[in-house]
Image 1 (cartoon, rainbow, N blue to C red):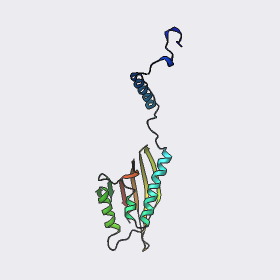
Image 2 (cartoon, rainbow, N blue to C red):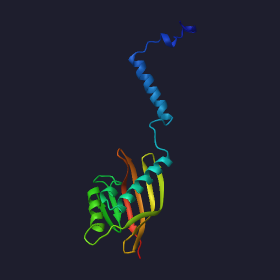
Image 3 (cartoon, rainbow, N blue to C red):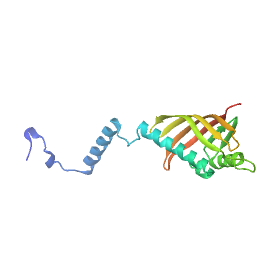
Image 4 (tube, rainbow, N blue to C red):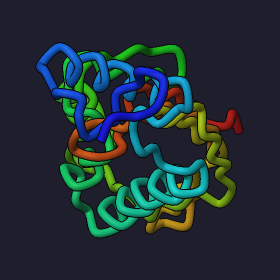
Length: 170
């Protein structure tokens, strides 16, 4: 049925490819303007996911599983690790550094924890964790220090892409 004053009723309007394309473009523009580009994690969900990565690292370290610990890091040659004035680049080089320092002959890994750690969500796919680390060694010695890690949400999950850790000077 035709509408009054020369208007065309929707049921009479032919859906040509051109009209469908323009309609899709208009709906996309509205969605973008409203911020509906993708379902992002809430800051609390991101912080919870980051804390889960750090907790899994602690569990792996404490059972002597260095490769499991490294699972929290981005497995890329672009991973950056700064510690006590030294720079290490790449996942494999970082694993090798940990092995030399904590699993070589006469070395021990100890028991790791993060007694104070803040997580700050920087965006839907970036977060920063900062705080203290502590290693309790079997001989009773305790090593402590500060750390700041930057995590990115990767296809495989949240991963550390940059680690800057230092030991307390005793």
